[in-house]
Image 1 (tube, rainbow, N blue to C red):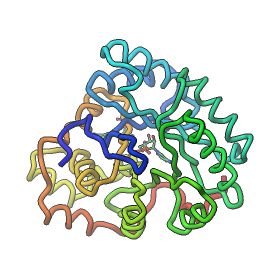
Image 2 (image 1 turned 90 degrees about the horizontal axis):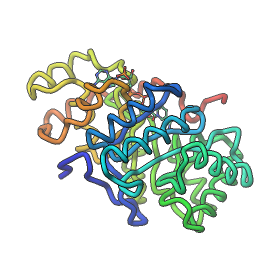
Image 3 (image 1 turned 120 degrees about the vertical axis):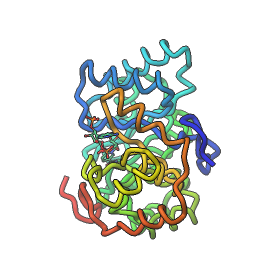
Length: 280
Ligand code: NDP
């Protein structure tokens, strides 16, 4: 059982990835961003999820440098993820996108590098570049984001290294059961983005009822449900009390019935685009 914020899942190449991390989507460069990263590290977070398209890798890097110094830990104690954006999906362009992310973050390596979206006809070349970076030992783990089963199958026809992670939209209204069992079968770790449905789920009556029973917040119930489903989760907040709240999910266990009740909320609702139908 997952006992604390530093507990990890072991990816299929043996690399350890924290079950819970901080997301920073839509957080602009500046003090709020730097502080959020520092606060998270101070309160025990060891995983940070960013992407080139968020245009905040410099601040994330600064938050990491200051955060680890204050916490007295080292870079190796952290798990940093970034993603190659759609306009850079190509062999050479992905290689240079990786260098660009490293230099903005001010890091020597990333722990996880993902293809952000499965752009038709482009993701295989990008993945080949990511495999090269991996084989050269310059990234600890590689994977994809927003890949449906058919995207994964198509990718794996030509890939020499199975992706270690698929980061997708996942929350009680989009439980992705088929994808999850597919990933399990293939040793691919599922990771949830927008676990709180960007806040939309927080006044849901079913979740509020369950939250009351455990004396927890709705956010904590959802994040605990992620963990009990063995899905890595990366809630975003820039507020210290919520950064703490979102990480206080290791001191209770949802019953089988409550897990089922939450699973039962699924109606395949998305806050983000469907990976089969996006135009960016
Ligand atoms: P989340 O589901 O994490 O929700 C974030 C929102 O909820 C923010 O408005 C935040 O506000 C609020 N919030 C956070 N914690 C609490 C709480 N305890 N109580 C009340 N409100 C809360 O949405 P995201 O879309 O940010 O997803 C998380 C991360 O996933 C992203 O930051 C990003 O790293 C990643 N992601 C990846 C995508 C991909 O395509 N691969 C797409 C989208 C996201 P506040 O900050 O004010 O607390």
